[in-house]
Image (cartoon, rainbow, N blue to C red):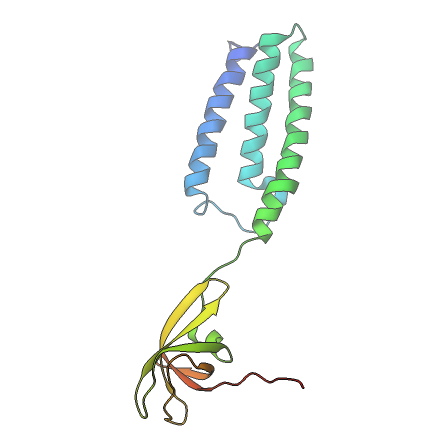
Length: 176
């Protein structure tokens, strides 16, 4: 069978090359083309995967079987649809929900416990480190009531202003 004057095998190969190239471009520039939250099956990643799988399956079946072109198209479409569903539900949906950031704001540091690494003098500045899920943060600190705090002490961050942490000596509560 021929479509547009091309044998089906050649047409499948052209579609495979074109959709594969578009998929590579989408991987690099997908954020620009992101349409947001719409119909999930109209997601460009899902559509490009479908056409890539359809054309690859169609090409392989045309080359390896004696089936009619209509049967090959139906089999390739069914296989591509099934694999596309698997891709969507087992790869794309978990990736979309697993998005997280290691960014923090100064305001989010208030209430956390830090450790003094450079002693804080009276009416002066020292340095503390805060261990978070994203790593270790080192920040300038001063005593909340302008008190001195020695090296190695645990401190509670009371407030943050102009990049400076205002801290107090921290003693964890123990139940006896």
